[in-house]
Amino acid sequence: MNFNEFNFDERLLDGLYSMGYDKPTPIQEHAIPLILANKDLIACAQTGTGKTAAYLLPILNKIVKNQSNNLNTLIIAPTRELAQQIDQQVEGFAYFLGISSISVYGGGDGAAFEQQKKAMREGADIIIATPGRLIAMLTSAGSVDMSSLQHLVLDEADRMLDMGFYDDIMRIINYLPKHRQTVLFSATMPPKIRNMASRILTNPEQVNIAISKPAEGILQQAYMAFDTQKVALVKHILNEKEHNSVIVFASTKEKVKELNKELQRSGLSIKAFHSDLEQAEREQIMLAFKNKEVQILIGTDILSRGIDVDGISLVVNFDVPPDPEDYIHRIGRTARAETTGTAITFINPKDQRRFFSIENLIGTEIPKLPLPEFLGEAPLYEPEKKMDKPAGGFKKKTGFKKKFKSNNKPKTQ
Ligand code: AMP
Image 1 (cartoon, rainbow, N blue to C red):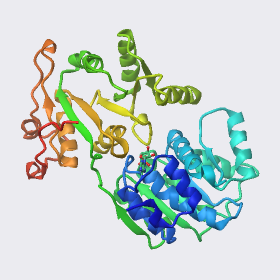
Image 2 (image 1 turned 90 degrees about the horizontal axis):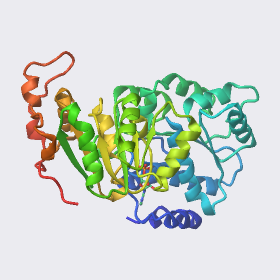
Image 3 (image 1 turned 90 degrees about the vertical axis):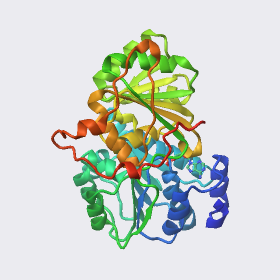
Image 4 (image 1 turned 120 degrees about the vertical axis):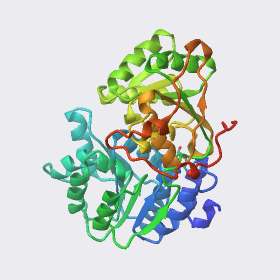
């Protein structure tokens, strides 16, 4: 399929071709016609599938046709980083269209709040906002007129609910016209998402793209390692060969800071990214990483959703992520839009069951590589043995092995 088949405005096509988009991805192929046909939509798609363009392109096309100067679209996203990225994509696509957008998110100082509020009152076609800041805007004096709104997009809805934004979202909905098109994107579809969808969408169509499966093109590998071996192992991997851009995930910001010091000492070009940093610092680091001035970024799961940096060739999970879905989001930072990348996870004996449930979720056994010899003996991977005596809260899944695809061998890149 080709983008020409959607009957997009020529200027929109110019914008997307100039951004290097050639063919629609599967989520775009399915979601774009439904959004163009004014349907409410629940779309299950993870980052890396092209989900942002799947809703932006049809909405931009509708705004061009509409030719009104009022606020048309509200996009709500969980984090400021994602809001900024969506805004950048709007700018790219709308380059030849004269469509305006503003992003509204927390952090920054009082002046930033006033500036965003002023921009909102002056008006834009599209507002991209995080829920908390938007509520603050809507409830503060001289609030924004939402009466002309035609489209509401909830991006990464599952993440927003995980972050406790349910009440904020429901409050925001009260400020919006009832007659509107609502589109909800979520990487997962737990009951709480369906419940929210049933309250704010009308007769929605549904599109599901590869739920809980990592993008094709990611070479997934793991090492069994004791905690005492992990720092030397990550240094070995980072020094072993040249990597374009690397993200290292650790479970807590304390660990991030510690590991950052350790790796800086060995002369690597690395920056830590965590919630203790000021917004301005976070932006600066992200920019330096995007511009390839910083080669390695180390962070918590704050980095795992929606960060859209091209050319990340390696993701290292210094710890097994607590939630299998987080694993998919973390490794989705690499191999974006059909490129290739490697994701390596370190598993200590305590984390084996967690890792096993990740393998269970994605239905793939991830190869465990032997540790480099100088690191000594590695622990064995024996999740099933451990599971004969299950600890509280962990359910053994039976019949699991049969679900594995037979791709135990590492893929070559
Ligand atoms: P997303 O899932 O929206 O985070 O998009 C992942 C990445 O794929 C972003 O860098 C997009 O710019 C890129 N992308 C999305 N759709 C396409 C497409 N049809 N062709 C090429 N790249 C795309």
